[in-house]
Image (cartoon, rainbow, N blue to C red):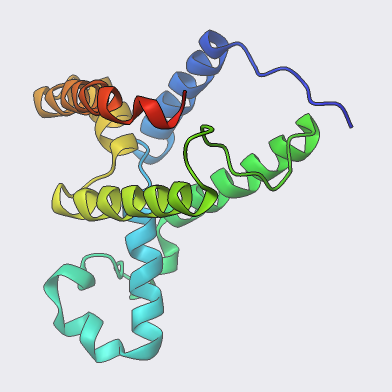
Length: 170
């Protein structure tokens, strides 16, 4: 199957904005991934050590009023993103196993960088009580000053770091 072209980024942005608006209208809050992930992790911990979840103030906030963390709508948002991404990739003919990298970096180094960055972002999301999607999309849409400061800091930090790692991609 031949790969299809990517969607127009402006139309995709409008679609994302409408999705965010619908989230506010239908469920009363915006989008985000780290809350759903924490609900899922809390569910795993509750299977192994339920007393730990109930006695831990941080984890108990993710267990929900029913005591079942999987009843959080953010868990289903994450599942929808994964399933929707898979279906989109299949329909566009883009499902393949590859490691995208520059010519001056090995596959192993690329994977180490990717996992290290993911771990740092996950840790930062927990410290900040929210992930980049929640901060940038939801906070930015509500004109929260902290979210705008966060977005400018992320982009500024990325541009500053890009100077030092650009040789890996050229």
